[in-house]
Length: 318
Ligand SMILES: [Zn+2]
Image (cartoon, rainbow, N blue to C red; front, top):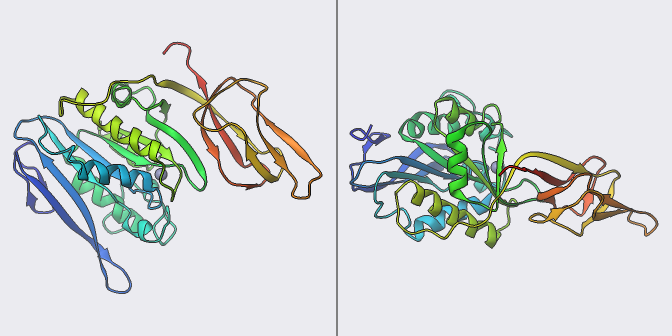
């Protein structure tokens, strides 16, 4: 593999750095769409890491993590191995402030994709066919969805030991074991034995400095563990979560949380209130479990059954 590191007819030699602008299509206005792929190769053989963001076009904290990592030069002068960094995969969603492709399809539910398929399927296929064969492992950067805020967390494929080892090296505040979702990048990559971690931090269309900082420091820690760089922040405590529960709205109304992501909770504790808009009625939102909140809802108006808190049940043995 080391001898033929080729993306779209461009060969990148050991010790070289290259920005490949891959033509991925046109808008109806005839504007060309390019995908920017930054490739860094050490002179010394080693693993190839994929660093990817913007598979969901509105999850901007991830885009900023990869942009800042490139701008800060952390992929330059690798001690060994290679890095392929893609700051924005779903260019269409990014331009439209949207998670999906303009046709409503989710790129991360379209893998492995087809070069003759729908637009989402084509974007997925470009990654699967042109980039994934070169990759040994990677990190895919995300945020919570609409108004859902995720405390910085690294997710790995449950029961896959290599993935777990990578996730613990990344050392985010929360380390979460999840089964990969069908047709996701992570599932497709795992099926060919290429572990891809999923980082989640903050919410869509909002910068969150803490999530961005933890994303970058996690990348550095992972690269240090792989022998690619020398310096990384010291490891911190991570909370390992293998089981989780959603706490949902028992009535519709105005929702205010009093406790948010990143905090421990105990069974019976009030985490917020739901009111009617008229100053008459109020109910508490009460935790049914002991655990840690790793995601919460920032929406002020909620419907019956809306997910309000994502609570991890803490592992006893890790
Ligand atoms: Zn996402």
